[in-house]
Image (cartoon, rainbow, N blue to C red; front, side, top):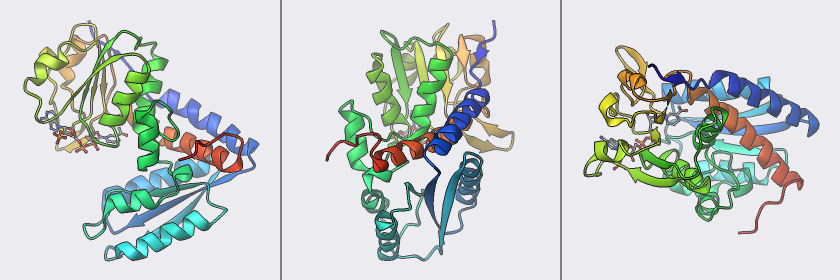
Length: 284
Ligand code: NDP
């Protein structure tokens, strides 16, 4: 029997509508984005983020810098945004050009306005189980699992991928939801043996068809985060034949993807609440 598809569009639209209500209630807000260089994918993502922000009533503040921008110039811009009281959220679009130390830029962003949730303070809060601002894609994954009533408590969850933006944070959110979590990566000895034990399998590796149908436990809920551009179009990390084995599976595109921007907007509302004092931001 074919798996039920966990579609993200409708849930994302609902979240964006809730965000729009919150933004109205708070009297508007702003999201500053910083794009360095000419990477076409980054330009596309920034365009999508701006459009979604505007639709929710969030005013984007658009900063674009040339590819040869130095680290000091970028740090100066970030410091200016941190000092600007009109700015609710700050988002340096990644990846940054090679002459810039990405970690230094992430560290420079005011943690209260770090809508990507990548600042070490926010990552630490997540590790400690006291989330403040959490990366958007992992929040979207948990929201989608919740929408489809996937039980996480007592479930064995396996995450394939250990990036700071998807794998590690989603593993922490699953742990917080009382799943028993394993994290796999490129040095995992027997990936198939690990994934076959997963009641909930989250795959974020960026490798087309990395997870074949026979690597999926019958009846599992499978979240395919992968977005790989191939000659056949956009494909995920999970082979489409897995739909015959899993009970629930996210489509690519149309699964996790739409939730990422919706959760970024929700993070912007959260950041605005922190700054305006209606939500307490924990001291460092
Ligand atoms: P990264 O490249 O930062 O991380 C990939 C992870 O996968 C690494 O931890 C790597 O292991 C692991 N990996 C790679 N190959 C294998 C393998 N053969 N077996 C097991 N593990 C492997 O990617 P991201 O986390 O940024 O993104 C992952 C995917 O998710 C990409 O396709 C990306 O496009 C997509 N994505 C989608 C989003 C959405 O909104 N839907 C948002 C963000 C990402 P190691 O650490 O050992 O190198």
